[in-house]
Image: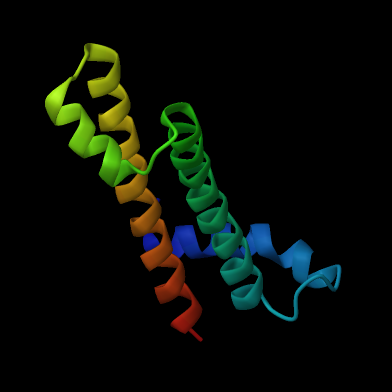
Length: 103
């Protein structure tokens, strides 16, 4: 899909939302939809973090220190998933902050 074709496709998707009065213009519609998506991704990673904190009853930092002394394959797998969730949550948060600064 070319840049022009991509813009037209996006515009075609957004026009009904503007026509229905849900958004004042296509730019606002796109920004709100992207913001919603970014927040949902961030929330998904927050849920992973909360699940791990509940499972182990401690923060990632404390868990990381504990796992150095006595690790298992399961704990190491959880550590990787937990660390990835923290990293990705921060990345989505930074993307959201940048998105908010756009016009």
